[in-house]
Length: 197
Image (cartoon, rainbow, N blue to C red; front, side, top):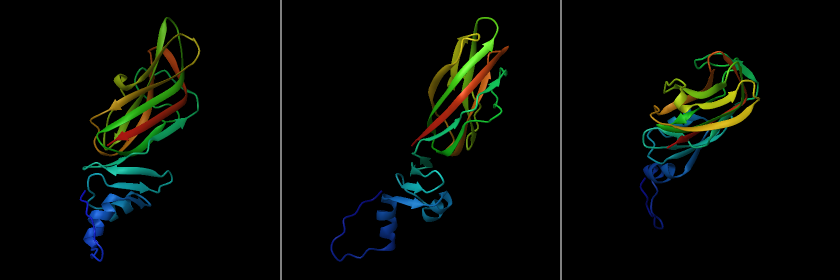
């Protein structure tokens, strides 16, 4: 962004306000539609505060708006799955929707247990992405808890850097699976997303 030093009695033009002032302050908008109207061609580094139901700060990274305020969601209900492929539980999520660039730091956590026969059983929780990006939940980005059958519950978390996202509005939704032949149980499910410019 350009910068300029004014001297006494120098005229301040509308173009000056747009270039030197508006693009260098944190502008406040009711929603993203108002932001798009007021800042149709933002410059790299422009910042905006969106006064939505859950207000957040965002920055323009030169190609897309990115939410800087971490977003999180919680589903406290304990629910189970016997699926050996990633699925939604009866209460979907938790899920978080926000504007991202190409990268986001995603953390999932849960109080998990596994009931099954035999030796160790595993339960998995991983983020799927929809919206600008479509990406299935996968083991490489999953919280995996391994326990001996009926060994009680375990509180754990896992953090992953998701790259290659399509910039825009993306929704991250936690999905679940378990070792074949066992029942995975999940409670206090948390999902936190930090978009990276």
